Length: 390
Ligand code: SF4
Image (cartoon, rainbow, N blue to C red; front, side):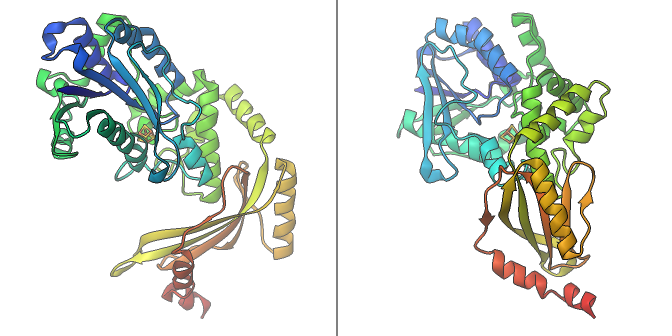
């Protein structure tokens, strides 16, 4: 029977692999049956890839363990997946590769950041779904063991995971069986390899900041890896330009957190030059917000329309926005980094709408959801709007 191991490149799953590869008594199967599978989002920290290449791939290669890396090839499921590597002698951890569709590509094209509440849609789309496809290709209709690296503190996640997948899936959670918590994994990997293994995550992952400890770890990581910081900052800049309520840290901004570090000057200067070098655009952004059923003060579903109006250099686009504001008899609202002209602001009551012209790097694409016009009309005609005009 095949043993499929979802290798997320992080500490917990690294601890399992390391133990299985170095301590045969810790496993119940032959390594010939093991298949290690990694779904690449395209945005993993290079530092993680480097550690995997230095410490884990040589071990997998020594034991001839089949190792597969896989990614989405497009936005839609119909675009399918691409096998980036399928080998018993892995060398390179392909965090980004030709043919792979990156999570950041998707987020930049729609000018948003990964959402930090509720279901982790990005993870389901770029990891879970991709793994399901490749596992189906590997095992066909056969029964298989699916190994997941939840640690002993994640029993709740285990219970949620257990019933998932096809009837041929037999889930296995070695860290929970061994009673290993995160600290145990950290100590084990440190003892075996002499390195503090970082949490695997996308460069722009909002969950990296959810605890103070995560922030303390992530900000120095950005300062030490400016090119990866630029990706996170650019993504956030674009999203905030469209909607000032956005931000990588659950509504707060990564920029502000980095700026509060006394050593952040060179990185922020670099970011400003990076913005200068990009093509810019004025976007017309309309947002229609429904009310939650039975509560006109609670926001329901939001529908958005995004349209690129004019492109040019950063300086040209800001000049165009000034001119538009003058002609429309409005002010340019600015916090020094973002520049917007509001045509309509949202009300206290829903349904309602907001409408803004904003300047931002020309990375996002036009997008108006099919349901938008109906929602926009409902917002325009919402009772709150009518009452304001009396
Ligand atoms: S690491 Fe974070 S940003 Fe990346 S897929 Fe997972 S939840 Fe989303």
